[in-house]
Amino acid sequence: MKKPGVLESTRPVVDGAEHVQIDRSRVQALCREWAQNPVPIPPWDDSVHFSEGSPATANYVLLLDALNFSFWPDPGQPRWTIDYKGRTLGGYMALAASLKRGVEEGVPLLDADWLARVTPEQLLHVFRGEGRIPMLERRVENAREAGQVLKSRYGGSFARAIESCQGSAVQLVELLERDFSSFRDVSTWKGRMVRILKRAQITAVDLYGTFGGTGLGNFSDLEELTAFADYKIPQVLRALGVLEYSPSLAGRVDRMELLEPGSLEEVEIRAAMVWATEWIRQGLQAEGLNRRAFELDWFLWNMGQAPLPEQKPYHRTRTWFY
Image (tube, rainbow, N blue to C red):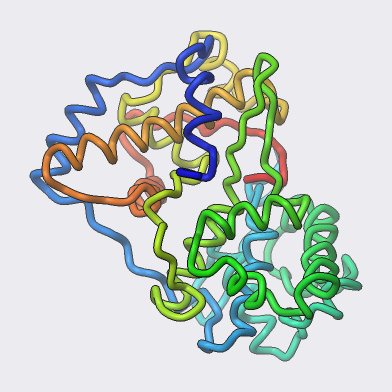
C-alpha cells in the first residue's frame, strides 16, 4: 500500500475542501526557485536525541513519538521549556532532550515494565523545567500503552516489532496503527475515513534518523511516506502563499480560537498540508531535484523555527495526534 493510505484518503478532502485551498501556481514558483537553490536536507540532531545504537534505542524512539504532540501553551500560561547542557529548548526539541536527560540520569524510560506503570509524578519529573508540558495526563496514558503493548506483544522490545516489518516503513506504520491505539490518527470528513497517521509515520523516519539509515533504521520504502501533518508546517505553507484559508477559517486561526479535533476545518488543513508537500515533491522532481516527502517536511519545519514574512498564527487544536 503506497503512502500508508494517506494520499488516497486525503485526496477527496483536498478536492472538496470548503475552507482550505492550495495555490498550485505558487507551488510551481517555489519549485522553480528551490530547484535552483537546492532544498537542503537538515541533519539529524544527535545532541537532543538519545542513541546508543542498541535495540533499546528503539524503545526511546517509540516513547518519543508516543509523546510527540501538542506543545503550545494555553492562553496566559508560560511556554514549557527545559535547560539541557546549556541550551534552553522548547516544544519537540525539549521533549526529545528531556527523555534523553532522563535516560542519562538513570530513569528506566526504556523499560516496558516501568513504562506500563509510570505515574504522572514520574513523568512530570522527567519533563521538569519552566512551565508545564501540556496534556500530561494523556502523555501518561500513551506511555503506559507503549509499555503495555511492548510487554504483551513484543517481549518488551520495539526492535522486535520493527524486525517483523522486514525493512518496510509502510508496514511499520500499519503495525503502529493496529497495535497502539494512541497512534490511530484517523478522522471522518463528510462521511469519509481520513487516515493521516502523523506520529506513526514520523516514528519510522525517526528510526531512520536515529540509526543513520542502518540496522533498525534501514527501510526500503521511505519514499512511500507522506509529510507529517502538524500545526507548524501549515503555518509555513500559508506564509509562503501555498495554503489559502477561507475568511471564516482565517479569522478563527488568526484569533487563535480552538478548532475541534476532527472538525471539517481541521481535517482540511491537515489534508491540504499533506498534498501541498506532495505537489512540491513532484514539482521539484520535474525540475530534476529528488527529495522525499519527509525530507521536505524536515526542511519546512526547520524553516518555521524562525518567524517568516507574512507569518500568521498556526491553527490550534488540542489533540494527542500532533
